[in-house]
Structures are given as structure tokens and as C-alpha cells.
Length: 285
Image (cartoon, rainbow, N blue to C red; front, side):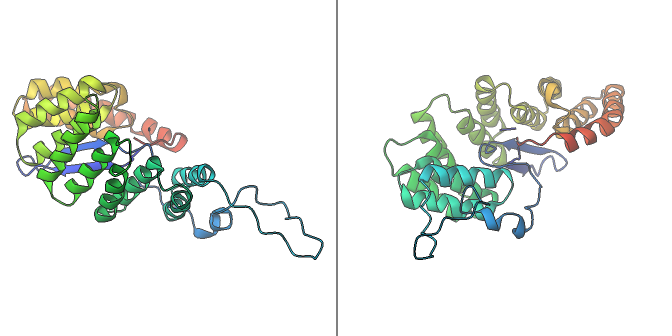
């Protein structure tokens, strides 16, 4: 999961220079911002395995019809296409997997996430609702439905979906995190804080949750708590510069200008290292 990433960014009107971000869908998505390779790089191998060997011919000289792949094989190919950011090919391969096995909820979830990444919230909503129609119903179906509804601005309906996810899985940290995002956007900061705290207690290793806690404390003008929250993400700061940027902002708001300058200088010193790291290591959030 260490990738964009699919990132949700919310900009508070009260704090226009601050960003709330959480990456929850990297299971399907690869590196954020990486453009798909040219079509010629993948089209020739998009639908089959073992390309390169000449197909055997029958006695009449005609090549036999190649056997269809299984749903598992199409899904595996699609996952590889997603990793390479060949999203159009991936969607076609997931569709083939679903034609062979319409009840494959995992594939519907992956397609829904890709629709969201491409800004097609209506299509994502249909996919997640089809997933929710299957038995047994998973919390992921309502997580996805809630995300699609939030993307469409239907925040009240989104909250209902996330709460339904929690009835199925009380440890669903994603649902708590998204409830926090909805509350933050609505400027219900105490509710956002409670939701993010619960999400962080379940998934403390996720750096975006530390960031969201800090942002909510900033909105509440609890700057010392915000600083402590941003520092929770220190182990991940090299790969998440927004955490450092927000820490500097919180220190400045708290009047700790010398500390803010020290962090800024340390960040500037690390820029070449981070640039080299980003070239050598690719991952999704």
C-alpha cells in the first residue's frame, strides 16, 4: 500500500494554507503522478500470458483458438497493469474477470477505486452498490459507497454509508477516517477529531492519520497538540513532506519561530536526499 496513491485533499476555508489529506486506496493504485507508458508498451501483451512463443498449428494449417484465461488470471493481469499505471488496460481486464465471475466482489472494489481515481464517482457508486448487493456484504462495499457519495457532495448519505461499514466491522479505520474527513469539511471539528483519534488508535502506522489529527487541532487552535500530532509522523516525513510543512506552520502559529526555522533548515538540507530517494524507490501510499 506504500502509494497515492490515491490522495483526498480537502482545503479548509478557515485555514486556506493548510491541507487535509488521507490515502486510503493504495491497495489498487500505484505511484501517484506517474503517467501511463505509451500504448505501444502494453497493448500487445494486455490480454494474454506467455507472449513470444509461436502458437502451434493444427494439421490443416490454422492456428487453434487460444484458450480463455481464468478470472484469477485476468485479475492478476489487471493488478499488474495497475502497478504499471496502465489503468485503461486494467479496467478492461477487470471487466473480463467479472464476466467470468460476476460475484467477484474484490474485483468490483478495485474497479470502483479506479473509477474514483479517474474522477468518475457515479460509475464508482454503481460498482460499490453492486458489490453491496452480494452476499456476504463486506464493510469495504460501504466504505467505497461512502467515498463515492462524498465525491459527489452527498455528505449526509456518505456518513450513513460509513456508519453501515462500521456496523459490519467496528475496527474499520478507513470508515472512521472518512467520517473525520466529512466532519472536517463541514467544520464540525470536535467530531472530526474524535473520528481521527479512533482511526489513529486502530492504524497508528498510517502517516496521513497523524497529519489529519494535526490539521484538526490547528482548526481548533490547539497548536501544541497539533505539533505533537505532526511529530507522530516523523518516521515517515521523508516520504511525506506535507507533514513537515504542516509542522512548520503549527510551530509558527504557536509562536515557536526558532523551532519552525530549525525544522525548515533541516528540511532544506534533506531535499537532495529525498529527491534521490524518490528516484530509487517507488511506492504507493
